[in-house]
Length: 329
Image (tube, helix red, strand yellow):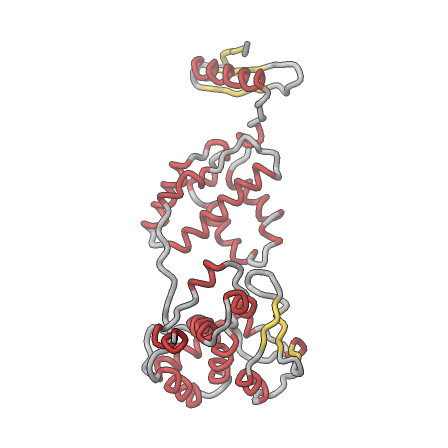
C-alpha cells in the first residue's frame, strides 16, 4: 500500500515501496490524487508492466531538445536547418513543460498557433516531424519508455499539404528562356540546359566537381545528395556538350554559381522572357517527365533522379497525354 504524507498546507506526497523496484515518490495538491497515483503504480508493479516515469517527469522539453541537438541532430545532413526548428520549440510555451505532461491537445494547440502566425503547411509538418522524432528517441534510446508520443494524436488535425507542383515548360517557353539567358550572360543558360538534361537538383548541380566526371563512360558521380545516398548520373550527348563548352576552374568546381545565385539569376531570366510561375526546381520536374516520355521505366528513372519511393517520384512526373498517343498504337 502506498504511504501518503502531508507536506505543508497544499501538498501530499505519495511513496510506493516494493521489493525489486525503485522507490517511487510524487507530490500532489490533494490526498485523493496522491492515493490514485499510488494505486496505479502499485498495480503496474504487481502486473510486471511498471516503467519508471521519473526521468520523463523531471525533463523539460527544452532540456530534451538540447540533448537531441547534441546527440541526434548534429549527425544529420540538415543539422544547420534543424537548429532554428529546435530553437523555436524551446522558445515556445511548451519549452518549460515536462515531457511526461505533454498531450495531444497541447500539440494541437501549437499547430493552431503556427497556422495563426502564417506558417505554411510544410513548415508545420517539419516542426511536427522533429518533435515526433524527439519523443521516439527519448522512448527507445534514452530510457523513457513510459512516454507516449503526443504528435501521433494530432494526425487528423495537421494542415493539409498543397498538391505537388506540376509546372512544365509549355509552347515556346524553352527557346524564349534560353534566348533571355543568353542575353543575360554568364552560366545560367548552360545551367538551364544541364538541369533539363540531367534532372539534377539545384544543390547537386552547384556542388559538381570535374574530378567526379567519367567522360569516357559518360557518367557523373554525385557523392553527396539530398537523401544521403550517392548516385551516378548518366549523361546525354547534349549534357556532355554543355560540359565541353565550359572553362576549367582552378578550384575544381564545374560551376561558379552557388545555389541561391542560380535561383536569383533564373528568376531574372524568366522575368526578361515574360515567363511566369516557373522556378529552377521546375526544370527537374520537366526533366523527370521527359525521361518517362522517352520510354524509360520507373526504376530506370529513379536511378537517374535519386527518388527513393514511387510516391515521391509521382509528385515530379507529369506526362502529357499528347506525347503518349504515339505509343498507344
